[in-house]
Image 1 (cartoon, rainbow, N blue to C red):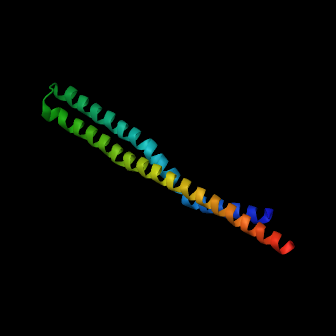
Image 2: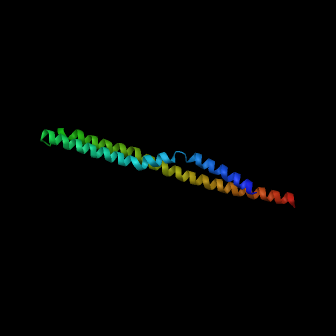
Image 3: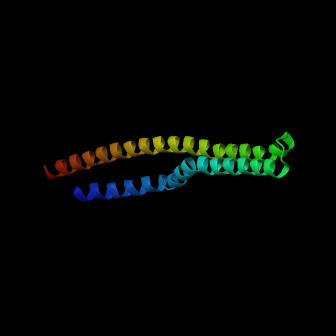
Length: 122
């Protein structure tokens, strides 16, 4: 029975590992994309200030390109991060459900095998 349980546990772990193989990527994107967007935001604002310094004026034509770049970088970071976090959370919940189902199946299967072995021995 111990060998059956150990084999089932090994197969269950392999299956769950396969299911969670891309979770690290999703977590990395969800965690890092906002910071990359923030870096782009800072860069865009710096470009706007450089434009102000070069032209000695604060007209919209001077500031707009840097601010537009800053907003685009912020939006890009959020567009990458929000779906990654949502998908990560959904996938984590589904993997957890699958793990529970596999645990239940393994317990039921081992109980059936044990009963069958007891019946054959008795």
